Image 1 (tube, rainbow, N blue to C red):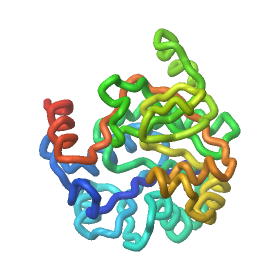
Image 2 (cartoon, rainbow, N blue to C red; image 1 turned 30 degrees about the vertical axis):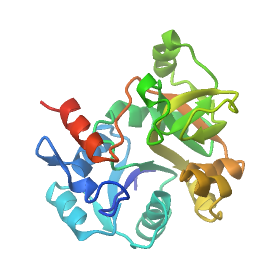
Image 3 (cartoon, rainbow, N blue to C red; image 1 turned 90 degrees about the horizontal axis):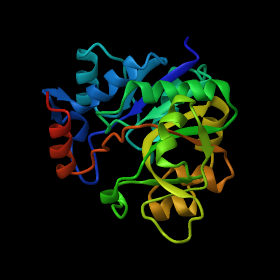
Image 4 (spheres, rainbow, N blue to C red; image 1 turned 60 degrees about the vertical axis):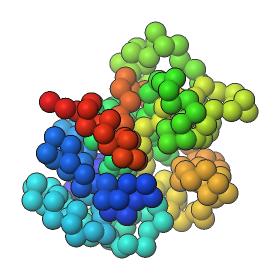
Length: 251
C-alpha cells in the first residue's frame, strides 16, 4: 500500500447547503472535481469517505474509490479516521484530510503539502493564501495566524515550500493576534501517530466555540505548520458560493 493516502470526507447533510457534494459545476458533481484534483496531484491513493449511498454511486461511476462510513461522526477527521483504521488498517504513514467542498483546489497545492510533510517534522500541516479584503470579516472564510511574509515574497515561499508554525485559527480578525492572518485552505496532512492522537482527544473549548476542529490540536499543543499557495480555492458553503464557483470554473 502507498504510504500516503488522501481521504475526502463528504456527506449530503450540511448546515447551509443541502446535498452540497452533488451540486453540478460544469455538468460534474462537486465531489468529483475535488476527487479529480486529488488524483492529479499524484500524491497517493484517493478515497471518498461518506455515509451516503448517493455519493458512493457517483464516485464509483466515475471510477473512483468510495467507502461507506458511519453517519454519527461529529467531524470530518473522525470520518477520515474510520477509513484509516477499519479499511486501510492504519498502514499509511501520511494521511491527507481534504475537504470535499473546494472544487477548484489546485493539484499542485496538494502535492506541495505532501512533499513538505515527507521531509519535515510536524504533527499536522495545512495551507493558506493571502486574505482578500472582502473576506476579512467573513466568518465563512477561516483565518490562520502565523508569521508575516511580505506579499512580494509569497511566490518565493511557495517555490521553496516554506512552512511556518501556526499560532491560531479564527473566523474573524481581532487585535488579540500577534501574528498575521491568512486565508486558511481546508486541507490537513497528518502523520499516522498524530491522527491517532487527535481523534482520541476530547473536543476542546475553542473547537466548540469557534466551530473549528483544528483548535483541538492547537489546544493540546500539537505542532501545526502552514505553507502557502497562490490561489484561494473557494470553499462552497452557501447558494451564493455555488453561484460564484460556477462562474469561476465556467469553461
